[in-house]
Length: 362
Image (cartoon, rainbow, N blue to C red):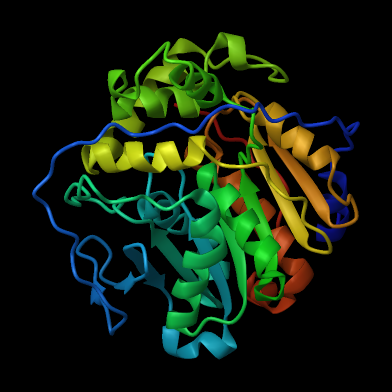
């Protein structure tokens, strides 16, 4: 059996570095929508337990832009004796996507010795009221550089391993770049530099007046963001079959139906207006992408510029959505990744960790 270190080394993909050119488009502006809803008051406190998962503490944290809700999985009082994982969700998703992931049986060894903090960004929690029409959703850069710091400081969290998907991965890169000493490592799923993805072309069309953002429902935006289209799939082995797309969209729509659609669109606008990502130095990073994801090429381009001694790239074959379609593969890769900086997390594992397991979308 190969050692974990050897498996991790073999997972590295060597790519030829290519220059990333960001289009110089104007920012997308949301059309105002009237609302009588007022933001909910929130403050750091003891928190409440969620109905579906009674062991999870829900702590609303008031930031200068609004409420970010932290779902605490583990004993916050034992933070000094635990490794802390901070998860940041993508557009059209929230903490539930990472709670589902960490509830997978293969994640039990890490959960026993760790603390997970799953965030719901402003207005993205289930059953949230619409944000006021005059509310300014914070830029992705502000969320990463300022608001995450507020959350961690109020929770008295000093060091984290970050796990982010899509827009959440971008946010974590910005946090790590600004607050390098607070981050032990990053797991970044479908990290997309500017100029990558169908939403980038949509941004260009809106900026030039060819389309209006109001034409698109939250479901339309999620479909474009998550699945892309045939013209935006450079670097993919193959587009997903129609049956796979239908199954995924059914799952995405179920999530969206539990969220506020207009709040989702505000997060999407913030993401579309993001700036070029910085390259992180001297930090352990695991980049992850599905072979059928529209962000495979962008993730590979970012990886090509990274320090290969510190950065690994996991390409999961035959899937679009790694979290939904291949949680076992992601979990096993995470186990190997954290062993580098947190070897004691794996002490409770009594069976060998293999790098891949077969998993098909049913």
